[in-house]
Length: 317
Image (cartoon, rainbow, N blue to C red; front, side, top):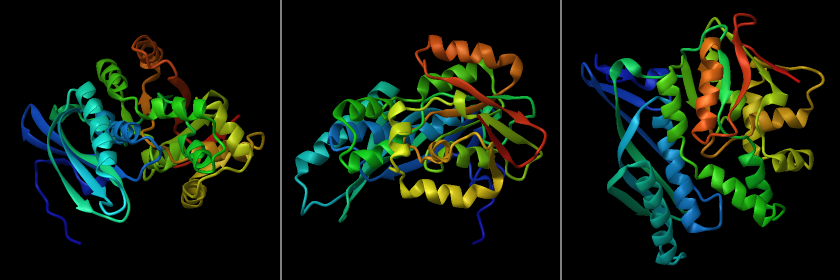
């Protein structure tokens, strides 16, 4: 399909980045994204909060400031009471208010399956766009949220996860990446993406594909929900994990001492996951300190960018 080319389009479809960026003037660009999905928790209010945090994350990952949003709603009006939708929208609106985002409208359709999310518009400086593809050999890799939400959501659906686990994980998924984004912009980083459906390893592969770099990731350093490890060992693995592994297996090599279930966690599809940041080694400790002081206490340095082997990710123990 032939695309529309415009000299002011900074980031578009060709680059498959987290959002689109269009230059309006020498010092102003708009950033746009859309995301919506089916419920992953039972509570409608919490689902609304998670969906909004997830939709805003792409803007934060690229160093943008979200300004306005429009609700995207698919709702089975014949089978669900309208009070469910009210609670979803209330949760979403509260999260938008926390982010400083203005709700300007939306669109709804009658559907057989409930879905909710946002179309988001934000702003940024055209010369300060943070993409997936700027990592350099020697950079340190920082992850800001623990992994395992996909595995735990599978356990929730199987009625295996306890209420305490559900509450803890939902709180992480509803946490905005706003503070982490502000910290990385203040320090200055080379690349960033947010961890969502492709899992940590899948999104890491996107960062090194068609490049002259690779990555080493230390499994023991990666923040992970303890419950996710437990459920992974029990075989509570979502189908998306297997699809991610199959798609990227040629780009990933794990050390023999790394158990298969650990690799499953690293491929686990996330909902509203953390930021995965490539920052120069000279700035890494400073950024980590800023993140911790700002309340992003589970952020960790999880590996580094290497020159060889290129287009490969090595998982160390």
